[in-house]
Image (cartoon, rainbow, N blue to C red; front, side, top):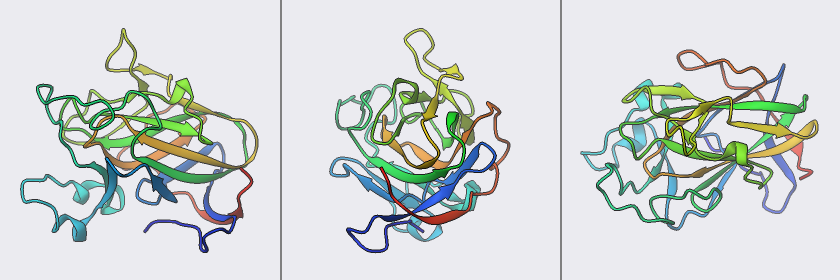
Length: 222
């Protein structure tokens, strides 16, 4: 399921509701996506898997809700493949394949960002996260190194000194209670995106993580 506005031009949206300093969202339940001409997020589940090439690995069976998103096409799977800025790689956030979600926050403040991803190599293991169309430094270059070939939770930021990422460096500062837009954009193509969490506590989720947060129809004020 994809959550969208009911009527184009109206300012009501479906938002996930934060409670007790946490909000949990299935990646496939996005409100909209944009900048899809070069790379686009595709739903992978039992039904859509049958339409993919036979050599395309799918992992919906072990994904939360047995569905996830993958940004395709995936043209850089190993380091030797050509890196093309603005096509299969974007170190600058907000330039390729953006997903948007809305969250109704009861509590403002600092939220760590956790993402459950499936990485099979070194060229499909990073993404960017932003807030209200702003791509803050603390949301750039979210990185995975451990947990290859399985769904893995992580919240680390790649730096020049630590390519595998630094803990507690990926977070968003929610300025006020109310509705805010959370966005994710491609850094590397082939990224497989199952679920995300914003939490005031820095604690690694276990297994598939908590149940998805409830939703509410709200008036958009941003």
